[in-house]
Amino acid sequence: MGTEPPEKQPPSAPEGGETKPAGSASSEPAKPAAAKPAAAAPPKPPAPPPKKEERTPLDNDLVKRFRGRFGEAVREAWLDRKQAILVVEAAKLRAVCEFARDSEKFDMLVDLTAVDWPKREKRFEVVLQLYSFAKNERLRVKAPTADGESVPSVTAVWPTAGWLERECFDMFGIRFDGHPGLKRILLPDEWQGYPLRKDYDILQQDEAWVRENMGIESGQ
Amino acid sequence: MDEIRSEGMAPPSVELAVPGADEIVLNMGPQHPSTHGVLRVKLRLDGERIDGSECVIGYLHRGVEKIAEHRTYTQFAPYVDRMDYVAAVSNGLGYCEAVEKLLGAEATPRAKVVRTILTELQRIASHLLWLGTHALDLGALTPVFYCLREREEILKIFEKYCGARLTTHAFRIGGLQYETYDGFEHDVKRFCDDFGSKVDEYEQLLTGNRIWVGRTKGIGILTAQQAIALGVTGPPLRASGVKWDLRKAMPYAAYDQYDFIIPTATNGDTYDRYVVRMEEMRQSRSICLQAIENIPAGPIMAKVGKVLKPPPGEVYHSIEAPKGEIGYYVVSDGTTQPYRVRVRPPSFINLQAFDTMVKGHLVADVVAIIGTLDIVLGEVDR
Image (cartoon, rainbow over all chains, first blue to last red; front, side, top):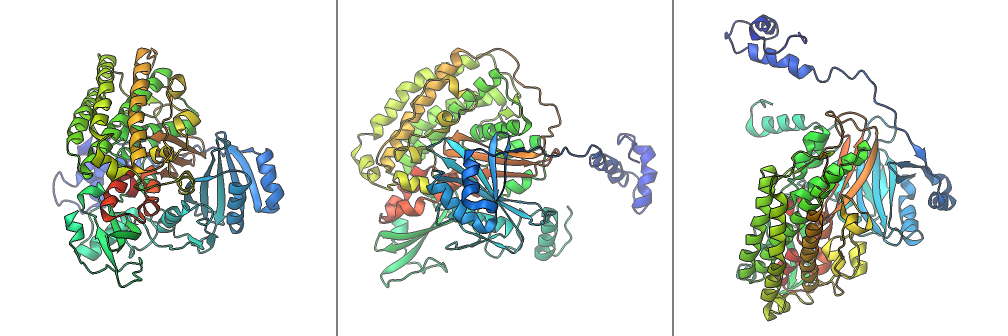
């Protein structure tokens, strides 16, 4: 079925008749059947497994100072595309940030976001992009956290985090301890679910909305 | 401002507490013309003085970051144009360069220079729209006509180059899709030659104007410390006296080849942000003129392949957009679709400073402060 080019409609029509109620219309049931092989083809070749991520461990003076101050709480440090990444324990995030700001001169929090890795033991990774005006240098700090665990808020270190943590909560449902007003920011307050989680299906959401508000089944 | 002053509406159910009996909470927007889109601001007023505010955003949220996870790297590129839709070229440049970094590829020298020219024209266009509407909000009717006249010339160049005026999708990952058209250099040069005196013309209308000065000087002050603590970037940061511009600090495209200065000011008020943006337009013009003199020959696309499969890993890349630092944090899992795309929106983060800037001012100044932040709600809400 998959080898059939979609242009050859007449031969593929009987095949389509097997899955759909046959004989209802002459030409119409052929269309979804012809479209199917084309749509099913792309997900097929996942044959070459994705290459493993190559990590260049980083152990420069900056990382050494962080390690000296926080010991085991600094889990890993590596370079990716020449960008420094530091993984720290979520419980120590605020202390690490204070140290980064006061002693290492990372005076600006450029961005705060999260990434969802559902298969990992701790599914979320809170990601902070820091910038130092004095050194003209960037540092990415990551803090892994599990669903339901809360992360210390860094709003007291950088007020920028106020809206960014709210957005993170809005999209991932990560709670930040010590945030002055953690509530949804982009979505309505009554919104259900956290859209940027990997298990949040946009199609499902659309179907549920149509069913609830229009009383019909979605045609998506 | 009559429509605002005259209302005695009941305070909406907000967390913005109303402590004193003399205070009221006033809703501004989301359909207020001077909020430049769908921004809603709740103001807590003591008489006409503001002693607290809260921005309500998200009316234009389209879930751009979620969409990215369901598209290929190439398919997602046009979506970024729809965030800051008055500076689509800058958004596109940031995204394309971020993915190029992720791939370990680099645009060709010719593509880099053409990108620089178009991005600088876009900066002028974005600043012109800001100036026109900002002046209009503050009661100066004339500048908007002049500004849109010049902006039109830039949009015509974009249209001739790629067929679109606003959401241009001018760049591709790896370079450019289109070669420049015949007469591109001539068009850009003619625009730049004319434009020098045009900026002076706008300044004649506004810089010494007593009403303009009265409405902008000392309004919405942001100190350098506050700006850095709040993550404010772009012209508002520079107007507070921080000489920082990503084009110089971490050069991208072809910016390291051209001479230009970073205009700064000291007071961090609305007037200073106006001065900084005016000078930025002159600098952008100068960059265009330098770049147009010598566009290297050669291919416009680097060899990146038709199917983009960046190796697993992640990258953060940001550029100096007209509004501030726009950054893309892209995570790859080795497939054709990005695992995660995070956009660091300058408008969103700059808008957070609104509350700090507006405290103690009058209701009429809210309009000046929203205007001077130069936000685009498409980017705030994404």
